[in-house]
Length: 263
Image (cartoon, rainbow, N blue to C red):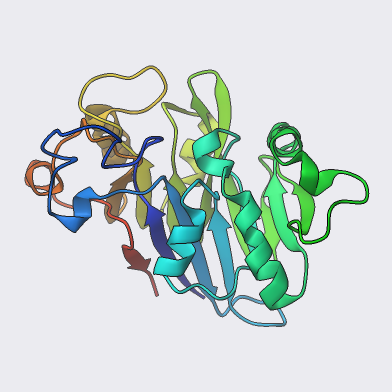
């Protein structure tokens, strides 16, 4: 089974550049310094599903439409949500394009807490007798238990975002974790043997609810993946080229559109 991950967006909640900011990062001409809100897409080739490869999107943030167009995505099998913050759910309405193209409801996997938030934010989707043309969503529960989603085995990775529970996800040798500043014992266990780890690293200074760069590097050293990529990056971290030069071997800054593949 080949597992691939595309980083659809690697920015924090405001994205980079930040509106009305003229700092060196926001003014950078390096395309790697332009970061949409954090999201990712797993592509699993050779899954046991009867209809073949699967595309699983992690979070539909405010830039979801732009990300799908940029990557020329024409099929999404399911959406998995990490948590309910606006920068991770705001683009849910745009899944209706896949409703029309694939002629089916979109399977959306989320914890009960996230489902309640979706029903508040997108009340018109979930109301009785909805307006014609709204997104068609089929909700599925999500918790810490291993999941089989369309023939793909998904391991949820419980983490904390200050006081908010968040889920990362591991599929095969790749793990994706965003918006975290603490891991549960179960997550440390489920990260054993992971080959590629994608992890949030907001900035160099400490933060209430995110790993900063030093903390993220400590986590990566403990997990010991062959390769690690940093995501959910603020303009306060610094320019891609400058920070990359400071990172240890086997650790790279992620960038929008980066495609990660394993055998």
